[in-house]
Image 1 (tube, rainbow, N blue to C red):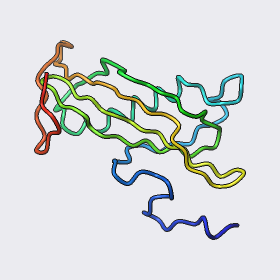
Image 2 (image 1 turned 90 degrees about the vertical axis):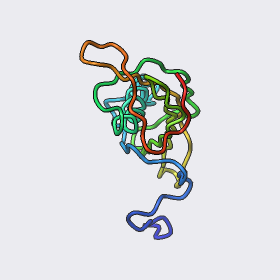
Image 3 (image 1 turned 180 degrees about the vertical axis):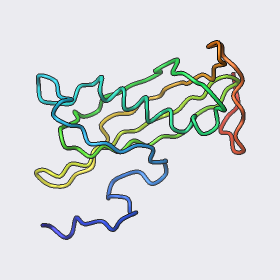
Image 4 (image 1 turned 180 degrees about the horizontal axis):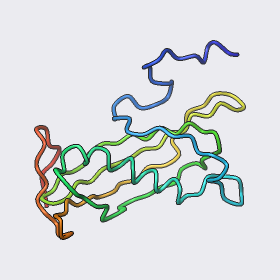
Length: 148
């Protein structure tokens, strides 16, 4: 075992962002592959939607729903066994919606350790009431940018 690759617990792995919040980590499995042996893009999209909802869930004050995938870019294929780290940043808080940017980084062990950004996306979530209608978003103490 290469001891140069051992990272103490709680220490970010080399190459991973330190200026964004880690909101999800997952390892894709063989059941998630397409005919080419890469992980299905739809599987990655579902994980990004989950990761993107973590920050808004903290202050939405109730139900909310994904209303838009504003941008989704696959930069590199995702492989079985990659350790995927999902980082999120709130880009904008509007009257009824929150826009979040998500970056997905893969740590690969074979043939040698490397860390690569595999996906980035921007999603918008809207706060909804019990009837599914948009409602105002409660403003967190340190809101990024106001808007509609």
